[in-house]
Length: 216
Image (tube, rainbow, N blue to C red; front, side, top):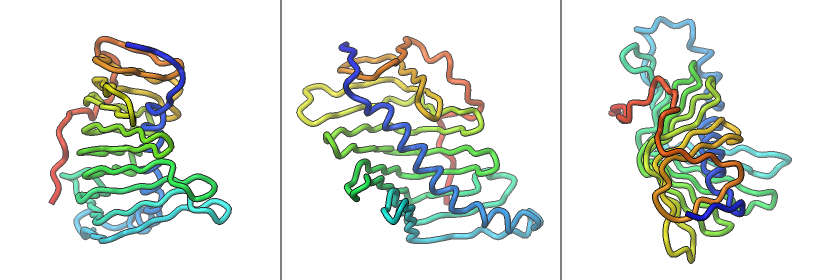
């Protein structure tokens, strides 16, 4: 294994994941507030289709998200307030509107009161700058604990790189200042101040069950 400080793709993965789900959930805060006083048994399920959301800074689009379908649920037996059962597609742009990163996942889940987020199924991020792509099965983000993590295998492929880099999970704070990657089994892992461990003994989430929630 070669360890250098050139490539920051592992940090970029976590940052774009956090940005994507925070960006989506923040657009729905008013909806939650308007419905807070309703009785739980009377709150209907709300379905939205073909939703496109854009975020701009100084007139320049910085984030864009496309969500084929969203479901808002307020049921005691299903804690997920926002469900994106048909996937989510997010683009992040630079100051001159070039695509920096592109993120896709088969489904996404949000528990807004707890600021808890999940991405499931073929979670893929592509960094356009150097044609680097990373793929994993799921990622969990817990804002109140300042934690982003997964114990799924993550595969990182870079254009013209002979071998993919493979790790068996990671965890970090939300700013990705103290990343921990587990069981680097092959390839190069390039990141400053990275901590490598043989065992996944410090993932502290009480929600980590590696079972995707059921959707309709």
